[in-house]
Length: 129
Image 1 (cartoon, one colour):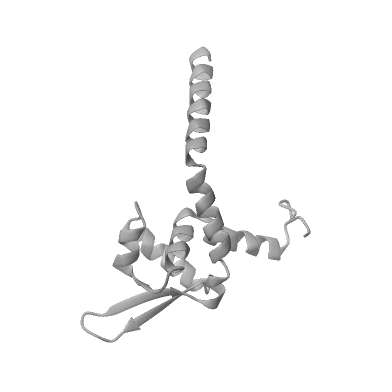
Image 2 (cartoon, one colour):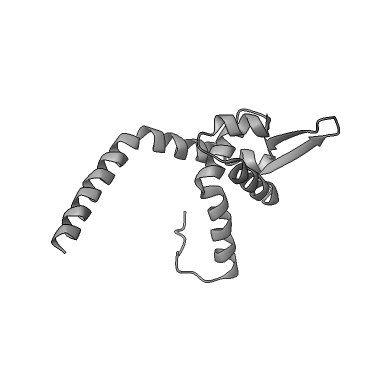
């Protein structure tokens, strides 16, 4: 596999960065992961994704829908029922997203310890100016 040049300035490289920004942000990762188990309603996703606000979930779902990763289905009933699911394209991300989310969860203790060490050193540096 060929390495991607992070300094490339071609239109394709710029567009790829935009896609990576979308699917790589923390809320998109959680939404994709949650939808991996099947179709969900908005409030169901909100309950399952700890810490996400209603506005951020709306923005994330709209972005994922725009990129063809999530599909939104609205049913003409009262009150309106809206469901979200992964598209075929979105399902291709499941293995990668699942691996990334699991990695973060499995390494959280080590990451927190590293942050504490860094913050302690940074505090020492500031104290001695």
